[in-house]
Image (cartoon, rainbow, N blue to C red; front, side):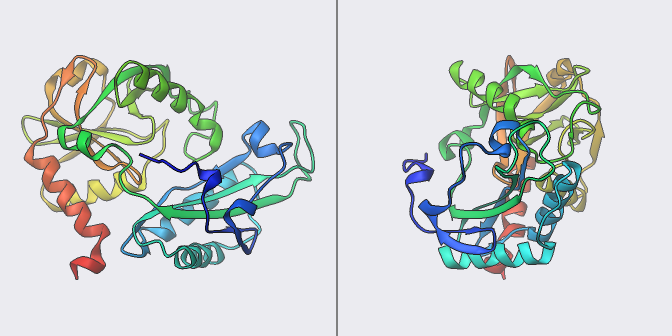
Length: 295
């Protein structure tokens, strides 16, 4: 996994319109984004030198900012071009891009009406989110004690930093028990998602079942996988799924920009197979994201 701490790396970062040295991209400790989570971000993949679904990611970033009352001091097109510029500067061919927007240090209280809005974009070469050896066998999940909150209590359809607090708690708990990740339920006890990825199940009839994203993020990768499945004639059913229904499924996988398509072999006492459907979807997804190579 990662060996060099991120604050010890070298290179360049796009920071408020300028290209700065990696280790010079600093902020003050009295920072509203750090203390009060007034911060939104995106996670994007670079395949063969191009950012996959860049426009969609940037559009979602601006939507997240709007929901958080943050007025971005750049246009969507300007940030798209900035993302392209920094991956070229960094010479990233297959990696990750992290645009982030946060309120600065002008005010340090709940209210932050006069705080400067800061924007940065970092990128680095990066491989698999999960251990590739584990992905071949399917990863194992526990069921988290933490739940996705009621959607009227948080900006649930955004990538806002504060939403990931319980994800970190859940993943740490899972890892301490020998699992790779954690399945989170929603506030009603239905299956929601993993800590950083959406989830799909396959039944004996070959159908895919996936939770309705009404209290968690409707992932860009999730939507692409649904399109791929439907193009193959696979029926996709979006619905509320109770945890006890997992006994009726034979396959399971996660989807996400970082996770891509990751097979799941176990969730608590429920076991799943890495079936041909999951393998075929994975192959088709890789062809999609690497169109330049495929061409």
